[in-house]
Length: 231
Image (tube, rainbow, N blue to C red; front, side, top):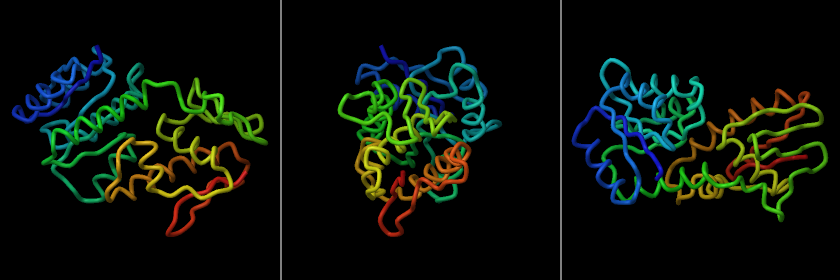
């Protein structure tokens, strides 16, 4: 049974999420503050963490940072919950390594859709392992087993989200891929106004690819349109 950890100091919301996820067949563990949540994350090693931002003593951003630096759980997908809707808060979360972001108040149906999308993406074999897709083209090779990209003789490990984004651009190399398509294909649900989500992840992806590209700029921004991988 898939295990999900919910970290939220609001007891009513925590219980609401637990009940509804259990109705979907998930095993749910609860924590009601950041310290307890991080400890349970290390102990339980859940498949997904639902994390509130506004908590006393240790906030959700700090907990997310600690998770991303901890052995065994550093790549666990994190769905962040917050009452904040400002763009900067979303950017901060994505910069830390949060996978998805849901603003309170939210509909339970939307929460479940995002949970399913995150679990599907992280539990399935990466798309690039499919026979019909390229693993190598010219100097670039994808390594799905480790979520890595190799350019010539240099290898760079990516996060699962960064790998999925790069894979989609790679499969469409030379052609523009819209931000809306990336949101749909990577996150698994219809996007609303999450353009900044893609921008933040593209920025992180670019910085990692540049470490092994010997100065070559592979990812091009098509302003007003999307992104293109030039090989």
